[in-house]
Length: 110
Image (cartoon, rainbow, N blue to C red; front, side):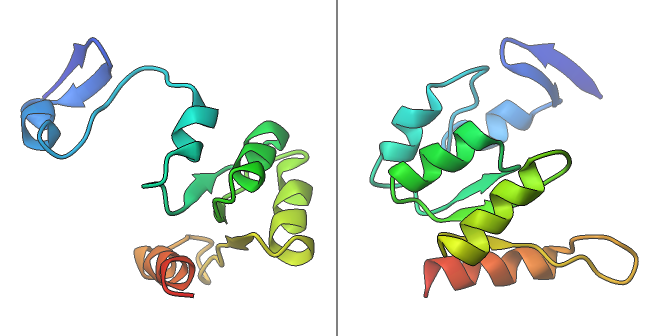
C-alpha cells in the first residue's frame, strides 16, 4: 500500500527502511547538492540548466534524455565536452539495469 507523506507518495515502511541511509525531501538547491564533495555523478534528463550545473561543478553526468533539446544537450555532454555518458537501449527499447550499472562503473572507476 502507498501513502502520502510530507515528501510525497511512498510504499508503507519505505521511509523507515531508508531513513538511516539517506534523506528524501521535496526540493533542494541542486547547485548546492552538486557542489558537495560526496557527489560522484549526476543522472540527468539533460535539461540545459541541469547540464550546466553538472559541468560547472565538475560532476560527470549520466544522460537520460526524453525530448526536445535534451538530446542535443546530452550529445554535447557526451561527445563534445566529454563530461557524460549516455545510455544504450536494448532491442526492446529498454535501458536495463546492467546498462545502468555498466555506465555508473565507467564513471566511478574511469
